Amino acid sequence: MQEAIRDIPGADGWIVIQAVDKGWSADRKYYIQDMQGKEWLLRLSDISQYERKRWEFETVKKLDPIEMRTSRPIDFGVCHGGRQVYSLFTWVPGDDAREAIPLLDSEEQYRLGVQAGAYLNRMHGIPAESGLDTWASYYNSKMDRYIKNYKSCGIRLAGAENIIRFMEAHRYLLEERPFAFQHGDYHVGNMVVTPEGELGIIDFNRADSGDPWEEFNRITWDAAISPWFASGRIHGYFQGREVPDSFFRLMALYIASNQISSIHWAIPFGEQEVEVMMNQAQTVLNWYDGFRTHVPNWYITNAEAMADRRE
Image (tube, rainbow, N blue to C red; front, side, top):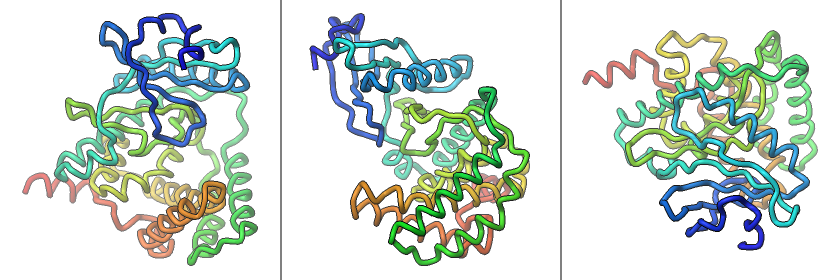
């Protein structure tokens, strides 16, 4: 490890270097503390990832004007004698949101959900890069690939035909959708609850550009641990305004697409991960009554949330 980091400016002052084993990224991640007690997140990647990692680092810099608790980019370069790329970010202290949120009462879960939605709304104010294809063309091709992969993977999900039927019937919603900055993997697994009881957002290594509402395709993980948090996230995103019906239809389309893609995606990770995705897909089918509806049964309306908080 010392050989890998010795080229990084300031590394000789690091007194704690602790591996972080969370997440699906191929990056090697480390918690760093220096002699002054400052904390950092270090990501190491193979040199072949240089251009992608440089793009990620520069992209995350676009978040600097936004007021939110998140990892801020500090330094980027090459280390380990030219064999690796390093990215250094500020560390966001806190507990894994997947574990911390269920321990809170419904009012606090909802408050943090509203905060998650407000953060996401601010991020989506960052303009997308130019030169991209239309969203409809891009995402229709993606759905075609997802459906083809599912049908050829040899694993059958009860209710998959309902999911695919819903996807086919709602392709029209993709027309005229805008592009914006995307976190790329926005859900409780990439959030922490800080010691002050606020929400912190981490892991921007899948940052991209696309339809801002696609970012709700992984709200399934949020709803599974707290419908209050997931509903608050929607309300916070729309800043208290009425949530349009078109949003729920598109969210259902993106969630449906994610369920079909997850079965094939999980195969290389083994039977246990396939089972996790199959179970989640069955849960999602129940939420949407076999995709006969486009509003999930866990959703708590603004009015219901306000009434509960007044009690």
